[in-house]
Length: 110
Ligand code: 5GP
Ligand code: ZN
Figure (cartoon, rainbow, N blue to C red):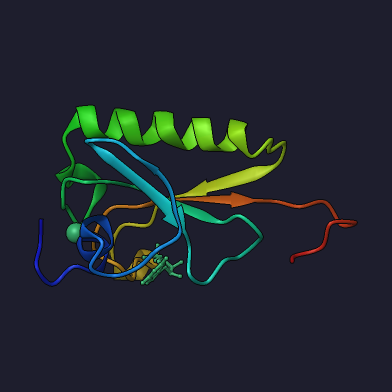
């Protein structure tokens, strides 16, 4: 837990979020700036900035939860994105997996 970290604050409930899932190791919520409808973020509760900072058991559950959310959303087309470092476009320094649905053209972006 990092006192300055916005995602740690979201886990604690100090910053509100639209929660999708929570277990003892994992938290998932909707992205505040979605790239498509249903864009979610899946994070380990263990605070670490980059993938290599996170224990394997936490990473395994984060990926499993990501899969279960994709199944629950009935997604056929989606991207999973995980950025590490500023040059790689990481903005929030708490590991997070983006689950970004890819709607077909008739569904649009909304
Ligand atoms: P990054 O570029 O670090 O991989 O992505 C950070 C993501 O976190 C962005 O998609 C951004 O919209 C999202 N984000 C940043 N601050 C908040 C917040 O306070 N609440 C939520 N739900 N998402 C946030
Ligand atoms: Zn954190």
